[in-house]
Amino acid sequence: MPVRKSLRTKQRKEPAAAASTNSSSAGVTKTRKNTPGRGRPGRKPNAAKNATKPATGPVSIGKSLKKWLFEDIVNHKWEDDKILLEVRWQGTDETSWEPEVNIHRDAKRALVQYWKAQGGRPVNPQDEGLFTIYALKGVKTDPKGERFIQVEWVGFSRPTWEPESAIKAAAPDALEAFLEKKGEK
Image (cartoon, rainbow, N blue to C red; front, side):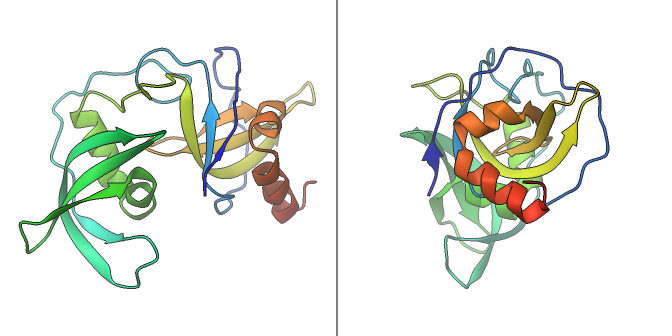
């Protein structure tokens, strides 16, 4: 279940890339950032050029053990603080509304292609700075000794580096579990 917390940071460029370690998801967490317009957190959006139809791929629905192949994503809508995607299933004319996080988990490439075709991922109409953390992926320390956490955002193709203090304020339980798992507590 998503946790709603606020994450306010100054707009800045990402720190220079350093070696990071990949890890599995620490859970989906809602966070807030100051981000102009649509697109990746902390970035201005890029208009889609020559957008293509999303690729097909396996998608698991909720906790269902059965896997379904979807044909494409045909629409989206906001429900509270989350996006639902209308998915057309292969071999049938039926569609269903699925949480964005499920499609991100199971068919990230198709989701990213869909958002590119739409001109970017839309901002939350109730709170333009609210984004969802999909996973905490890595840890690095800058030359000044400040630690940064690599964050994978739902609906975006690339992770960003965020100050540990901001993640601690927004999602302390997820951060604690992640650092404990990494042995960096």
